[in-house]
Length: 427
Image (cartoon, rainbow, N blue to C red; front, top):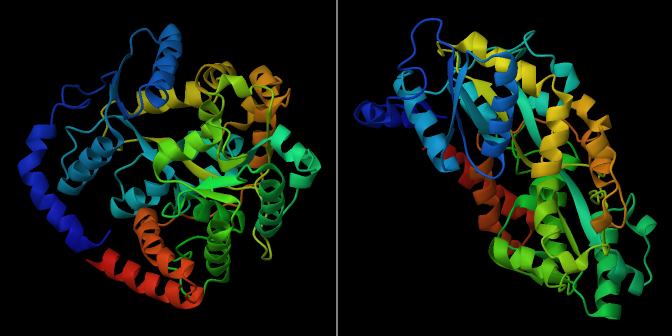
């Protein structure tokens, strides 16, 4: 984040910090064992953290834990304002940070988060998650959920068009489009549904080839990036295909599969609950690895989304916060089995992936051990660094997609996107 932007935020914080005071550490004395935790999503992150709280309380009855549910935007705004202003009293002891934003906070506010190197056994977590929270040789977070990607597909529809499970194994997006057009021609069902303005699939494609919007130095990497050109070109082919149903927003996108109008959906594992929401389709679905780009080093594995836990360095209960995360999120295998069954949360704690919940066959997916498969794909996700401005880059790509759809040069469009991105992050 540029210093000018931080300064502006800090000035605003001088007026607003008082309003945000009163968080977890303010009322704590030295040696306090009260923890305050900020997160979002009552049915997922909050519910899971409350489960962790209950488990920790069994052996640590003297520790008081308050789990605060806020909107994701509010968590990010309050964290940003307090860190920018240097006001630590209103901050929590532990905060959930989306992986795409982690490096922004770590690089913009050095010293604000506890160095957990050697305090958490990070070797037990998926490597791609650990890399996202590592900077300058130090690792700052505790990895939480994964957005490992897969292609959910209707077996009955694809079989009606002459395709079997093996036909979706180890394929490129170009082959996926070819299969889709056969499926659409023979069955009248769209192969997939995508929102032409959404950049999620472009992110999946980029990470599958070990590339991103920014280079290792954090500089924009849109123009002249061969993987970026391949991802945008491929996405444009998908949108142009008659087998792709164009949707707008989440409801239409998910509605396309629940209604049977689309035969596949390629995205993060967190979509499982939405796919299973249409109970009448039980037994008709399966999951395959995502297709890869037709470029060197691209693999049939990637990620979309995910978040992790961070301890604030100024916390007066820092040691307790670290012990809590270590005891539950870095050691408790049963905890991961329970949150998978109850919340559909795929953790990135590797020992949990051989547990009973991960090995269970799922009748909705025709008996496939879907979470065991997702775990195997998770360990193949290329490790990259997201940089500090993923969503700004998303906006720059979204802005040039309409001209690409009309046939403009992808390379030229990406030059325009890079110019826009550089201008935006320098403001």
